[in-house]
Length: 211
Image (cartoon, rainbow, N blue to C red; front, top):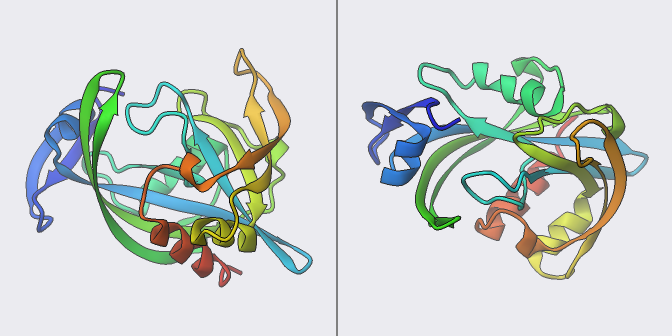
């Protein structure tokens, strides 16, 4: 992954050329990414799915995150970035099936395994209705350690601070990354990738409109 090329930009999103993933995060170049949240209905309830990032990730390892997300490679369009669904989760969908939920800018820095990073992203955010059972997902071992789902209203309450934790059903890769194990987890807001909680509440509220 270290030699993956990204298109990089200045703060006004004027193109600057390309850089490797490592260079982009080391130097804090602006780049683009794709976010997609999967949701489904069951009776009067709506559920939202989210992933657990692998422990070896170069940013926010071991955190809960968007169901599927990824950087745009050099020359790639946002329509083409839908490949992330297939690569990370084994979910096939067309771009036309996605519900646009807006665009966000994130500017965060930190340190992973003693190596500092500056992550400056402009992300297009989408929702997708997905009825595929969790047990039929095909998780990408390098990226995703597990996928879970929880009640949408409870997740909103979690990020609004009125719940300290929610119960989530999920699947996780076993030790050999060969088969999925069904699990139940208690999930808190601080276990998610550190973003403004308003990002999560805004996206979750928008997902109510996914049909």
